[in-house]
Image 1 (cartoon, rainbow, N blue to C red):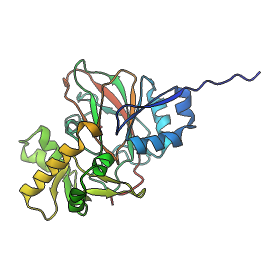
Image 2: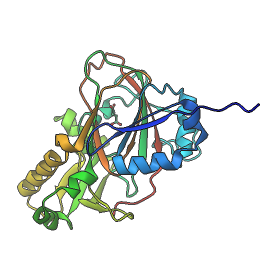
Image 3: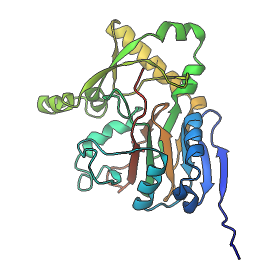
Image 4: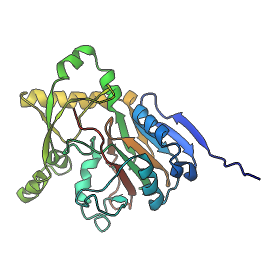
Length: 282
Ligand code: SIN
């Protein structure tokens, strides 16, 4: 007699303009049967929470493969073994923990590349007793709701992004040697408004945004701050308070994110995998 396989699948919105939660089971996720639907929800809602799904590292890697092309970390090369990447302030676990401090400020991953990663998937392995939530905001919705005159003013602007800019947020007075090392991580000029293949548009902002090309520095700074402030308003945002075993997937091309402060000695540990970018900034 055939046994019925029960597969749980409950999708609910967690905030009006960003974020859905999917309550399901491991088998359903790992089968890849729902991959198309997950990608559709990811693009439409920006963030998907899988509460207490408790995937192992191997399962998280397998799940990532169901959604697209697994992205290796910088320096690993395409031939690198598929692994999870530790997000932690503990330098004995991640030797470049200091560099990850840029993540405490709103950002998009991969602004030094013309084709940023499509998505990140992060699981909570150890929590900080206080703080350490992750904030997300929807940069599609932020663009959509901008008043028309503002859209017309900014839609053709290009912005210089530099990795060092995001590092200055946590260390405003680096040594020259440190600053040069940051500079070695690159700079890139990107459109302020990304016109996606889908026809949708999103804002490209964040801690790496240095200056709007051709604009006076004071005016540029004021506009970048104004737009960041606009895009991160409560109506476009979702704050995820982690429970052990939660996994969160986000569309890196239509959101910004940041970690909230926590004690760097707390042992907070997240395991991240990523999906290769599929579309260049345009
Ligand atoms: C990240 O910016 O990728 C990490 C965010 C977090 O640790 O909450």
